[in-house]
Image 1 (cartoon, one colour):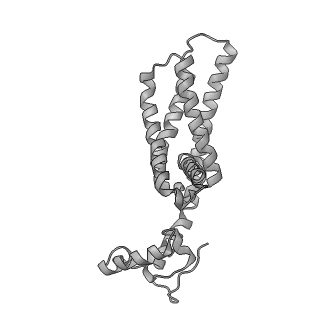
Image 2 (cartoon, helix red, strand yellow):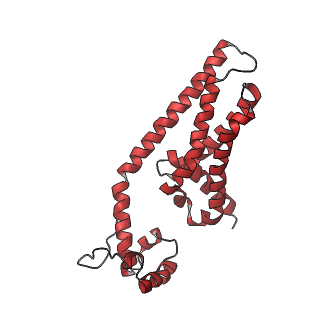
Image 3 (spheres, one colour):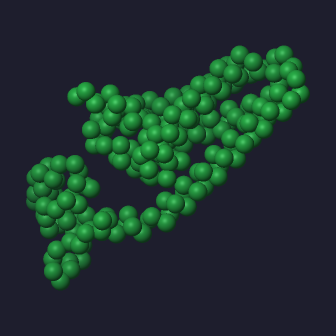
Length: 216
């Protein structure tokens, strides 16, 4: 119980940083902290020092809050599953709204004029800062997508093995890939079998040994 707040925060930051984290917990946490800090800085900085009305920022703030609140709500129920669960690809569609909003605010940082004209060097420095970050985010996102594509075959093999594990009802270490508690999986498997659902509706091909091979 003492570790729960720490695990919760880690889950939330992994959730937010997942699109650029290369499926690694540590790097996802770092990117999650980075994008949240960047968003707060940009909103404060644009309102305080640039000619940007709050009305212009509200759509991006709203999209960002949707991602942040989704991560916060999801962490309440799922942090006990471990931070790896926050790396599921289906969450990218949610968290990308935060990254897109941060990128849009960086663009506003580049193109808007300051309320009080600073030195030319400072103005150019902010433009270079914003442009560099936008390019870096785009490169990292593209690299992360290519990395995920290279691991697609591995994940496909894992899911094929999990179909076989579920169909045979084998109590093996890999079964936790389906759910953290093997007992729950085996118990609910009987419901699927009774009504001919899931793998019992479309059975996987059985190997000659009838034993699933490890993919780890």
